[in-house]
Image (cartoon, rainbow, N blue to C red; front, top):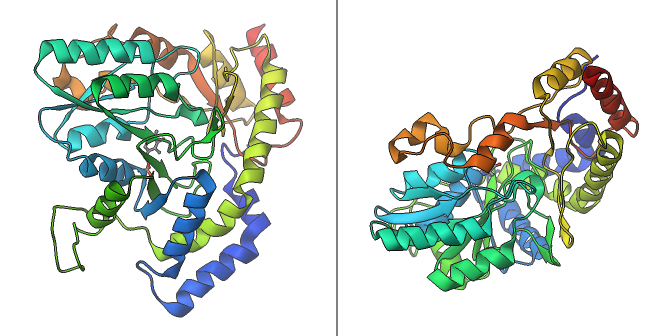
Amino acid sequence: MSVPFIDLKAQYARIQDDINAGIQGVLEHGKYIMGPEITELESQLAAFCGAKHAITCSNGTDALSLGLMAYDIGPGDAVFTTPFTFFATAEVIALAGATPVFVDIDPRTFNIDPVKLEEEVARIVTEGKLKPRGIIPVNLFGLAPDFDAIELVAKQYDLFVLEDTAQGFGGLYKGRISGSLGDVSSTSFFPAKPLGCYGDGGAVFTSNDELATKMRSIRVHGQGLDKYDNIRIGLNARMDTMQAAILMPKLAIFPEEIQLRQKVADSYTQALEGLVETPYVPDGYNSVWAQYSVLSDHREALQDALKEAGIPSVVYYRIPCHLSKAFEHLGYKEGDMPESEKASKRIFSLPMHPYVEGDFAEKVANVCRVALT
Ligand SMILES: *Cc1c(COP(=O)(O)O)cnc(C)c1O
C-alpha cells in the first residue's frame, strides 16, 4: 500500500459537485476561450491576494514571460534570480534573450540571499557588460523570501521585482499576501501546486495599470484595439475557460486548505525533531507548504526506507540551475553557489497536501528512526 505524494482525488471528492457543475456550465455556453468564468476568476484572484489586477494565463512559465515582456527585457539585460528553483524561473530570462545572473540562497530558508544579491548587482554594474534590470525572487516551497531587503536593493539600483510565487501564492509575508509582493507577481495553477487546476494554468498580478494593460495585450498576440490590431509581439497565453471554472470552487476552499497544510507541516516538524533538519519559517511569515522539505546527510538511506514502506519522497532540486546543461554557456562551475549546491545534495520532500492523515507524520518518523539506527 502506497500513499500519494499529492492527493488530488481527496480534494475532488470534497468539491466534485461544484467542479462538475462548473464544467457543465462551460459546456453549455460554449465560450471555451475567454468565457465569462475567466473574468469572474480574475476578480476573485485579485480580491484574494490584494493586487489591483489579476490576469489569468496559460501556465506559470508564460506568466513569468508576460512579466518580463511587459518590462521589454532583452539582449544585454541582466535579471537576477536564485539557482535553487524550478528551471522555468531562469529559463524565461534566457528565452527573452537576457542573461540570468544567479545569486546564492540563504541556507535556512532556501530563498535568495539579499546580501549576496546586493553584492552581485554591484559586481554586474562595475563589470559594465550587462544592464541590471530586474530581480525574480522565488517563494520556494511556499515560503516568501525577505522582500523588504530585496525591495531595498531594487530601489537602490532601479530594478523591478517579479515575484515567482508558483509555489507560494496565498502565503503571508509581514501581513502582506503573496501574489501582491512584487511589482508584478506570477503564479502557476499546475495541478500539483497548492492552488492547481486540472491542466495547465497560471496568472500574473500587478497594481500598476500600465503594466496590466500591456500584459493583457501580450497575452493575446500583442493585441491593440482588437484581435486583428497587433501593436507588439506577444504570445498566445490565455487560460482555457474550463480551467477557470475548475479553479473557482478550489479557490473557495483554499484558505481552509492552507490551514490544513499548516497542520500537516506542524505534525511533521513535531514528529521529525532530531531525525532530520526540519524547515525554518521566520517570524511574521506563513508558508503555504507547496513542499515539506527536510535536510539530512543520510538522504539516500532515508528515501530508500520510506520507499520500502510505501511512502514517496522527491528531491527538489537535484541540479541547481547554474549547473544545468542548458546554462553551460554562462560559465558557472561547481562551487560558485555553495549553499544551493549543499542543499541540493541533502534535501528531500515528503508527501504534502491538505488531506494527509493525522498519524502519518508519526509513521514517517518511525521509518526514519529505524533507518537511522
Ligand atoms: C511550477 C513552477 C513554475 C512553472 O509553472 P508551470 O505552470 O509549470 O509553467 C515556475 N516557477 C516555479 C518556482 C515553479 O515551481
